Length: 88
View 1 (cartoon, rainbow, N blue to C red):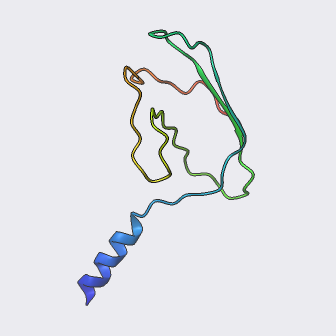
View 2: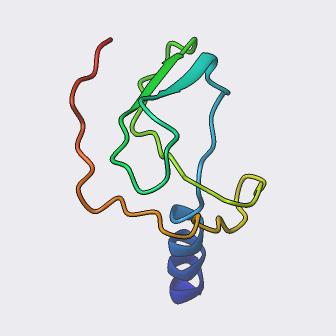
């Protein structure tokens, strides 16, 4: 019984958690030319008073639902991505 409870706890502790939608969101691209380095500017409002632990951005060529797989666009290279700034 002790091992069964430990297993249930482990399974429940790795369940993804999803929160509210982001409000007033938009993305600005510096260019849409193929094979060019591009700057993405993400802007959004978090209306919840709960502390945000992290936000995940996915670049998908398909239109996945939350929790389903994302297919990266062909040729997408995010190996040199950096966070330039953030604000509250």
